[in-house]
Image (cartoon, rainbow, N blue to C red; front, side, top):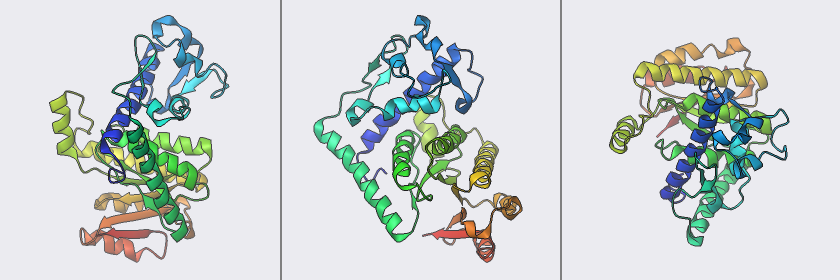
Length: 313
């Protein structure tokens, strides 16, 4: 994605998305839900009117007409729709003030030229997605550093809404060494269920560990990476199990298992026992060409049964 437009916009937009999520978590904590996983948190809409929450005015009014929820609660998916409702790209670049509940620009507004550059990024991604549909291939949007990734995930979801109606054409990539990886995967699946499109995900362990930790230490924010390799293994396992369960549940999701870990492959070659039909073509494996051929070759031998393998140069 960073090749399709200005990385500075992705950085700025990611900052907005992270602050919106933090504001949601702040309100959830005020309502006694800070120990609940993000995807399960629900805000009581009536409590959002209480002044001590600092969520009066335009934050509450966005939900007051009942457009998003009939249950009287607001979950993270509803919260994200606040950004979807803002039509102009430069209007996205605002964040809620925790004290006042008002929307304020985190940085300077985009110029008209910069607005056009951002629209160009989305248009170019749309052209790629159209070609993927035309030629019957998948479009896998690669992952970047965590400070770019929220925007990349969000913009790719917009492509999924348009191009993943009948099958999973556009895929997000999720780095499982990221502490928030499972929340991102599970939230993405829940959005696809609610809106009725097909979810596509590529799961990797991660590629920027030293850079991420160095930047976190330099700037002074929490290290976004799991503390050790085994933690990442567990996170990868959890994400993959969740994906396979989703495929088994409705057969509308696709996953690419992109890694070079033999234990993961051995454990997941039980997928036929889950009732995944060989013709479904919902699970893929990917390895770098020439790297760990002791994994790639056995997977290739199983291709006629239920696994579809890809190698990358």
